[in-house]
Length: 323
Image (tube, rainbow, N blue to C red; front, side):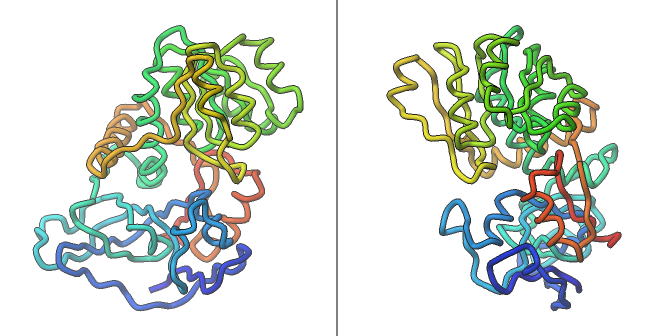
């Protein structure tokens, strides 16, 4: 089969298409014929040799990719043959996703509703559970003001939709007029370009203090967003698109009675529940992933370069079966 190999850490061009052996389903496993594979910002950091956590660096060579969707084409010992032909999404355990086939644990399969296109399902696999988990933890209430960073990104676009549906006024911050227009289309009440040096003042003028911050950027953007919270607000840092988390002193948060959270720790079982809930919401027309761009499998390097350039919107996918 064809797969994308990373033989050494470095620039996006280090991702190269290669012929490798087909995977075999071991006990308790299935093989998925991959239609789409997810690409995340963290994967670009891993490829460069600068993962956010050193332990995330894989042994080389490796096939990157942690989220896939497709059809079950083979089963291993102990797996019910009835799963053959099922449309599913699954994580891979951290690697193996940029490939035409992948072997994964049968217990981790998530069925894709018939009404949900496979590309949408893959886009929601990780981003959907992240957005739903954050919204549940934040307990956003009608009438509150919610600031969403990177509001035209994969998670940010979902948070924007969910907060609007919850009855909140969304302040969407993103980089550039095109991304701000996307956020407006998703229902944001206020949009601000955070590339402008005075963007926090623009938020204050348009919306006043905010009740909730969803910080997916980190760094100085995340710290400035924290400063926009009203006393007693809630701040959820879940990403580091800037390259680092926002440094916010716990005593600063405590002095203003602001609850400070980094990520939403959940069990594997809860992660699967949230992913399934995202697919169910999509099937009901209540959640729509924003897929900004797709690349063929052979162009995985170009996909990484696009994400790193900050020019992408929404989710970036590899179209594997059609490439």
